[in-house]
Image 1 (tube, one colour):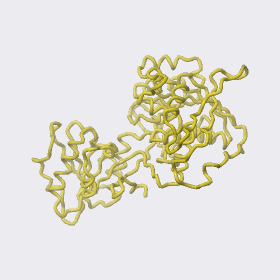
Image 2: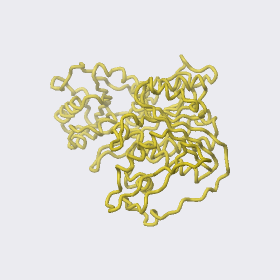
Image 3: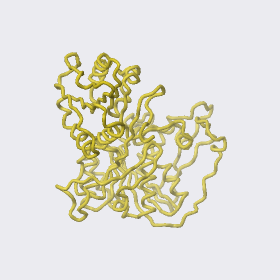
Image 4: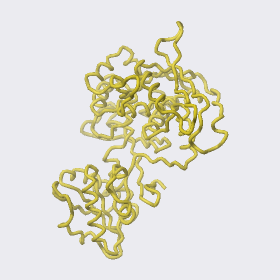
Length: 445
């Protein structure tokens, strides 16, 4: 299989500059970043060729044969040819010859991971991909100019964009033009309707709430469960209650405090405890670290000998003001769309490959770029352009998390042509529990 990578030249320059600014660690001779060769007369002017860095020194300790491993030969057939467009905010208008802005990092990481996936798809064979890469910029007006490119509408599948407003614009255009959109980043629900070819990879808030409710219900129906939030967050509570009811779990208690609440000094938690039962508290809050920490202090003082568990949102993992003592003492859990096990040989192998290509280690966006692109390629190879219709209830195993694609039903606006779902969403969510080494999965085990 031949994979052609059509680039906007400023995007290529951004990637080259980024890799040049990330030389390999512990190496006296920095690895060369992927470079482009000046095309000849028979090649398109925007075709990009990639080369591996010279003598890269591996930052990961794993199989000693790994650094010298040769690429697997292409054993697949010629397959069908599909056009993919990647829509990423490289923000090339903001960088110069010596600086790439921090806001470009997401796009650079994502594409570098995507390139590794494209290389794998090429070696595996069975499908041919032509990939156009677009810088979506920041403003909606600039993005709409990108969409007006004569090559834009020729793509079959679109990966991206990232900004929420761009996703809304893209979703509307794709619905009218019957194009497939894989939205890799935005977790917002309700961005599109009557759009059965739209696939949202990042689970929505509802998916996180349902995952927490399902896990709590699976532990014991006898636990005393209380939902705690500010008044402005109360609209999230039905997500838990509806899912718990569907699972046959008793209704959760609710404690809603005023929006101006800064501490819980006047809040009585006695009704949340029962002798011999675990008191479970769920806080669907992420915007205020101080609010969460204030509740932790209150619960620590009020729990006595009662066993307690606390469930919260993915953002808690990055809170700087929460002391680990509280996370451990209160058995804190969080939901998360991803988890990277850095002890895994598969993770180490991907880190090594990414490092060899860029001179930097992948962050969550690098893993995401790899997984989303691999998912798209595998689905096209298996099902062709009908894959959105074929993957309802499908399961795709990734490095940092799985894809469990399910239809989102909204009967009020459901597409009459399909009449069974509005769009598709990845519903896979981890439940992580804090232990001595940090947050680790308890579900799936």
